[in-house]
Length: 209
Length: 237
Image (tube, rainbow over all chains, first blue to last red; front, side, top):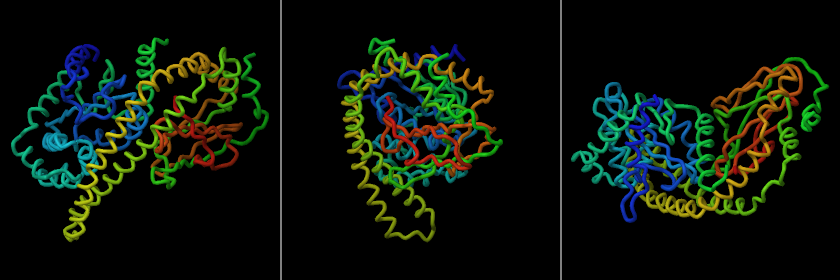
């Protein structure tokens, strides 16, 4: 959907600009890697989506090692809960974003995906989510307060609206430097795309061909 | 005739019957125990990839750039990377144990409390390791990007035409490469038409994000083991 890219670029441009000196990077708590990495990947994901789980558990660890930890890629998580088919996706996103306020987004992200099959069918998953966050060593009282006061509700909603406006229609969808990659593509596909985009960006930066 | 052909043709005179070969892949994990590599892309090639590459390198316009500075940067980066990886893994295990213990109605309360304390104590340690890794990455990235670009420019120029060359080679042998991925147990079995074949695969290295395991082995039996003994750790420029 090429026509969707300008919208996404507009949406993400504001988010991807390096923060002004002294300003807080609004995406830092749910990002991995160097804020100044040559390539930025926005993962639009839903904690209740089985394909997102597959990506998080089977694909991302290798990508993180190869591209994120080496400073080639910055990886940003954008919440895109598909509420019509995943009723627990919003509360899951909220617990992850509340955990992010304590610097615990990624441990909770991992736990949510790892135990997806346990909380997915629950009618009231809140209590289970709290134990997950607590298991990750987070401050339970602060987390409970964040959830009860709905402190991250607007943030999750803004994420989802932005992702929908961008043209993403399913999860996971990845925005990679001007293109949308839809679905839980295998590591080899990401490797090829990220390697090629990284090469171009670095060649430009270093003046090579 | 291109100079790589004689290397690649070595061994083509031998023939055998069509057969199957089982590939078993395992590499040392972060805890040093060899673990199966699931989802590893395996290619059976009807030519010796290393010989083809060597022939391209032999006719390179310039020698391969020195990589000493880059290798040193990789080495320095490794320590904080491994420290962070191990701590994060440990924190994940503790959190998982807690979740499992809590799910068990007869969960041991004292043990839960102990694990909870462990988990809380690990949070600042993981964070400190992450900060150290971020610091190391900042020192690493600027310099490594430009050094990497030099190596990649050389590789792009030296290996230009490689894909077409191996495609022609496979066509001339009337044998297409066979590919598959390993299952959760790190194994896969592939049909192997008659003739000489090489197993080619590369896998990430849990100890070093700037390195990978590389295998290019002749198929000499019905089972080929891709492991630390049969592979080489190569830097990823």
